[in-house]
Image (cartoon, rainbow, N blue to C red):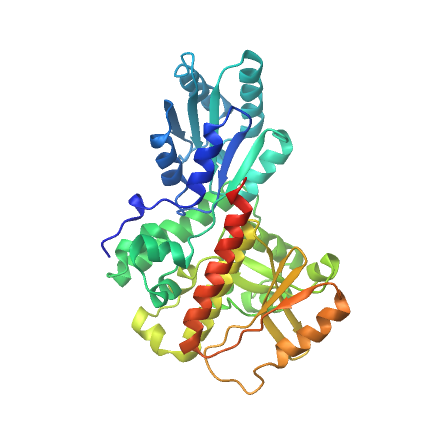
Length: 413
C-alpha cells in the first residue's frame, strides 16, 4: 500500500478551487462526517490558491464563543492588503451562535468591500445545516463531502474490492489494515466514540445517551435489515418510546454514521410511516465491532453476503446525502427489493445477492408491477441479481454510476 491519501485529491477540491477563484459571492461550506478528508481537501485548495490564507479550528475539548470567530476573522482581514485573502474556519459547529457571528462579519465585509473569501467546515452536517438555515440564507453554497467511494480508495491506496467491502472507507485508517487489532481500536476509539461523544452528545440534547449508543451498535449489527422501532426497543431492552428512537436515528444519520432507509411508496407521507431499513454509511463501523478479522469474514458466506449488501447500500446512501439521488427500499409482504434509487423521473431497483436464491426475480417483478400502479410515468432501470463472482463488476458499475451522478451534481456548479 504505497499510495497515500495526502497526495490524492478528491473531486470536490476542484469545485471549491473554482468557486474561490471567482469574485466574492458566497461563503463556501464544506460539510461531512469525521475523517472523510475535509481539512485535507481545503488545505490542498488553500495551498494551491493564489491568495494568502488564515486557517483556524474550533475542535477543542471546551467550546469557544463567537468572539473567537471575530478574532480569527480580523486576523484574516489583515492579510487582504488590497487583494483577496482566504479564511478557513474548521469545526465551526462547535461554537454556539456561530452562524449569527459569521453573518454579521460577512455582511460587514460586504459593506466595506473587503475581499475576504470564507470557507467553513463542519463534521456534524445536521448541525451545520441548522445554522445555515437560521441565519445565513442566501449567503452560502454547500459542498457535501461524503465517505470515500470504492473508486477513491482504489485510486488513493490501491485497494481491492474485498478490502473496501471489509475495511470500509476511512482514509486515515488505511495504513493500519495490516495490524487488525490496531485498526479495530482506531475505528472504535478515534472514530465511533469521538463522533458520538463530540459531534452528537456534546452538541445536542440527548436524554438517554446510553440508549443512543446501544441503538448505534444495534444498527451496525442489523445493517441491511428492516427493523420496526417496536422491535428495536425490544432488542434494546428499553421502555422508551418510538419517537425518541426515531429522533436518535436521525441524529446518527446527521453525523454520517447510521441511517434508516424508508420504504419506497410513491408518497413521502407513506414512506415516513414505514419501518426503517438500517444502513451504515461506512462498513468499517460494522466490521470493527463484529469480532471478525478479514479472513474470517471472507470465509463466512452469510456474513460476507450481508456485508456486501451493506457496502453497496453505503455507497448509495452517501450518494443520496450528496444530493445525487434519493434512496429507499421496497417490500410488500414477502417480496422485497434491497435498494430503490430515485432520481428525477427515473427509478432504479437494485438487488444484491451473493448466492443462488430460488425466487431470484420475484421481488423485482412484484416491484415493477407495483411501480406502474404508483406512478405510471416512472421508468425502471435494472434489475440486477447475481452471485458474488459477477457481483464484483456489478458493484463497480453501481459505484461508477453513482459517482457519475455526483459529478453531474457538482461538475458544473
